[in-house]
Length: 87
Image 1 (tube, one colour):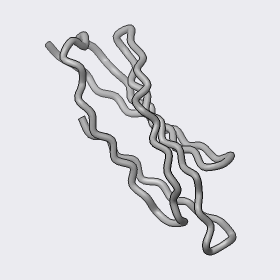
Image 2 (image 1 turned 120 degrees about the vertical axis):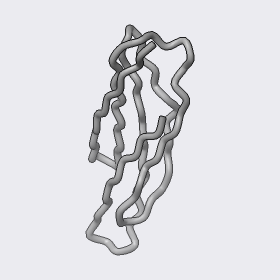
Image 3 (image 1 turned 90 degrees about the vertical axis):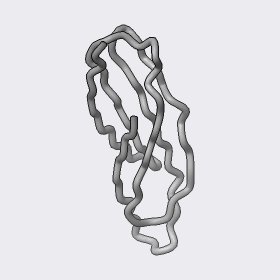
Image 4 (image 1 turned 135 degrees about the vertical axis):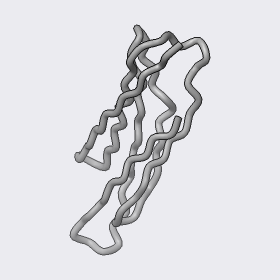
């Protein structure tokens, strides 16, 4: 599975860099899995967060949710998506 999230960072100073944290949580079917957190330093501008992962083979059929949270300093944005596993 592949999930993409585009975001933009702005600051008053031209040379400002941001410490960015990206967290993805998979939930549904009685499970909650937090995927490894990505931390990086980013310059101002538009960025694309791309996460690829394999859905576990033993996951139960049903509806699942992906919550992706991007934070920089005191600012935070969470985007949710969903998918269905059929057996």
